[in-house]
Amino acid sequence: MKNYETLSENQLIQLYMNGDSHAFSDLINRHKTKIFTSVYLLVKDHYLAEDIFQDVFIRIIESIRKGAYIENGKFLQWAIRIAHNLCMDHFRKIKRTPTITTSDNANIFDVYNFAEPAADVKLMQTEKFDRIKKAIDKLPQDQREVIILRHYADLSFREIADLSNTSINTALGRMRYALINIRKLLPEAKLAS
Image (cartoon, rainbow, N blue to C red; front, side):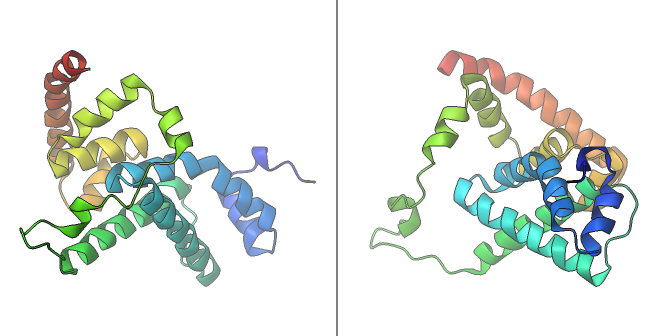
């Protein structure tokens, strides 16, 4: 059995393209936590995040097989970009989907809770994580997105700017305001808990 831990991402991809499925498994295991976390923090639903996460790797496999992946040593950033785009596609699809309302104009999906968090997810969440997540959730969408892409997906500000079609200064400004707003929100979260 080969020792995949010492191989670079590009070497693993090359091995996969040559028929070694274990190389791709190792590549997935290296980055699955960061990719899943970035998806989960955007969609805020564990089951939906799992579905999108699987779609991300289907897209990655298809792209690699077509030769669309350019070996630039930034596999994680490329995968995060695919994940982000799939999340945005999901939100666009939801906007186009008509809502079903009850007689008192309440959205039926707000009335019934179909998605219950898994027990293992509940156990893994700590009090500190919950406070920070609540603070991040209260941020405006553009600030929340920058925080997630920078701290959970490890993207550079250049990559965040490219992904969001803004300048680096805009991405930096959003991060600055996000951090200021989180600092304001955290003392409230501490008092409320």
